[in-house]
Length: 252
Image (cartoon, rainbow, N blue to C red; front, side):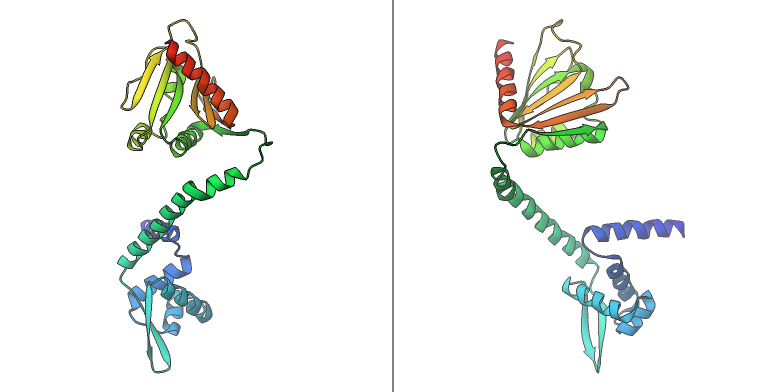
């Protein structure tokens, strides 16, 4: 019984993610079990009043999950093939993909253009492995071609604990990275260039800095091995950081 309840909860979570409410799910599953049925029969089976059952059935018809046919003075409703749920999910995915592309190409750039030039920098603070993961996702979503990194040995091992396939995703997106490593170590990867600062300069650095104008991020670790980070969204500061990086890069 407990296992069935867990399965039911998981199924409802999945259905909710594609816009199917708990009442809609209950009525749809009832119809799968009953076959063509009247509103009264369905309402009795799911223990929902007839008014709510009828309104929910109308929604399910619109969503393409239920059909109906008149028989005398009554309507008999029937569930469509459950594969329709996959088609509904695919349709929702297409709409979301389209919405994301529209946000990236039009809406967000337009909103950014409306921001006042007098605003102070947008500074956001992140904590823990989840916070570091959010910063890395922001890099992937913000960068088109290239970004720069000061890579500190003491922080490196904390970066990808929650996002182990970050490098694969970066490469898949065609994003290159220039890395100045502070201290020994650091692996060469595809679509990455790496240079090292000579030993004894700032080997004990505890910061990992990502420069991706108009933003740059600083990631560090507390004495208790707890990672945290800050993302600063300010064009002029990020460009200055990039200029300094490029100067150091040419000298190495």
